[in-house]
Length: 122
Image 1 (cartoon, one colour):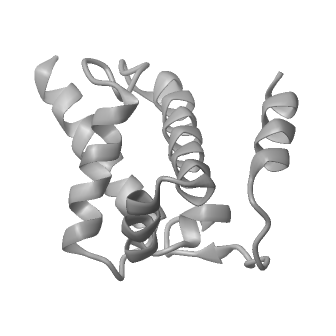
Image 2 (cartoon, rainbow, N blue to C red; image 1 turned 180 degrees about the vertical axis):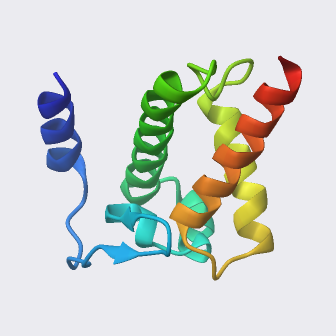
Image 3 (cartoon, rainbow, N blue to C red; image 1 turned 90 degrees about the vertical axis):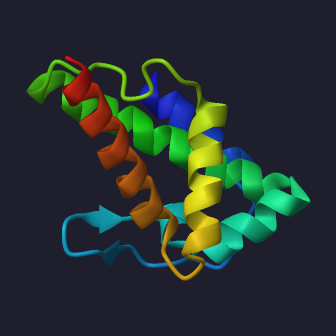
């Protein structure tokens, strides 16, 4: 199932020059996570395929976070109490403040913020 979802995502992702994965000091980052927040904001305004590809990357990132958290914490849904649109709005604000930051760094900040909220609420 995951292979099929990944194949579908890759098939619908607009082609762009390949970027090598990068190590951000904590983990390897692939794909649209390497793009800047400035690019996120520009693509957000256009609302085209490039933005949808970044949203798909973000959804996949958060899904991966859920998989890790389900094993190591009582949190099984990092977006508990909110939806993907709210997460996108959070990234919008972060990227407006830090356009040079990578999407991966912004997504990690979102994840950290949400996890801290969930753990405090328990």
